[in-house]
Image (tube, rainbow, N blue to C red):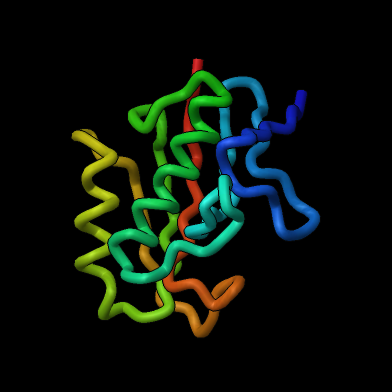
Length: 126
């Protein structure tokens, strides 16, 4: 049975989608961008802080589902410029330990609200 997951500690969706959907033990987290849920403003002064905000938004959604980062099995990272890869990778790596989730990183022409990074995730939670 499909269940909508919503955290007040992550940004509200800016379109017709859910923050996450849980089906049995699978959790599908929609792409998160660097919006501070308290102020509803973008955190984009630098790519590291923007990435940290994205990861904190993912963390809030995980916690709402009684999950943790070590439950994530797959992430997709979308970047506006692959030159930002090393900085994003550095912050992203602070949230995981081995075995790391499977992942791809894709450079795209544009992202919602002209952000630099968007990350989605799939987790298996008990």
